[in-house]
Length: 263
Image 1 (cartoon, rainbow, N blue to C red):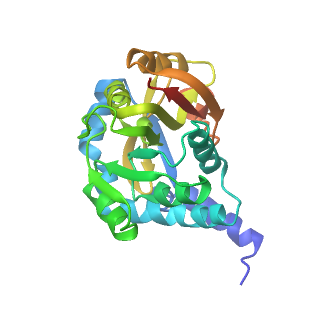
Image 2 (image 1 turned 90 degrees about the horizontal axis):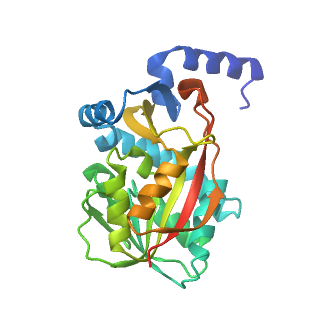
Image 3 (image 1 turned 135 degrees about the vertical axis):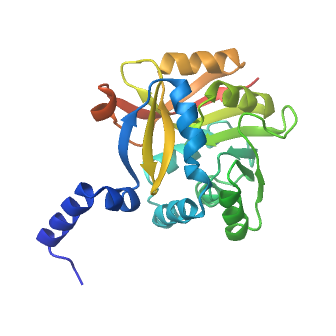
């Protein structure tokens, strides 16, 4: 049954005006700016948002329709860009490490959108995420690991793909160095929030899928400097999914996907 427009409008206003409802129904809400990396580190340590089993379930539900749309040949821009970045490396069926893989949804997305697919391995620091990924995608390889201390040798994968998790890592320079270390040929930092006017990197706290999490909006120059220091060279960048948090930071932002050479 189709819900009348007025009822949808009233329901939307009710959800947005009620903290417990908007935090548990909307994907991202209740942003606030943090006072630097130390505050972000303290907030990340106390929240454990990505470790909760209910966060896993909500994230999985959010991507279910996106995966179906991709299979129908209608991928959302960020999913299309992820596949395009991998194809742009020119490597046929590359070995790929997905850092911060969550519930493993990119294993299905890349199998759908990348011709020839990839030899996929996923890793995440959340046991709950990896448990769900293993249950849902038993033919793929998953492991629990910290992005700043990856348990793989140098050059273990053709491509290290960080799909929307770099923004949630307070010690992101260490995560960049580790990605560069285990990448034989390329790193892809996907859908990274950056300021349009290249403000300094800023940390925020928000609710994602009903759980409190920390994220960064990066200064583009600073981010690419950290990549360069890790031995990575920018090859190409793409605009990705819209993401403007200027209402909180005072500066417009968007997301970019960066393809960088590790060799």
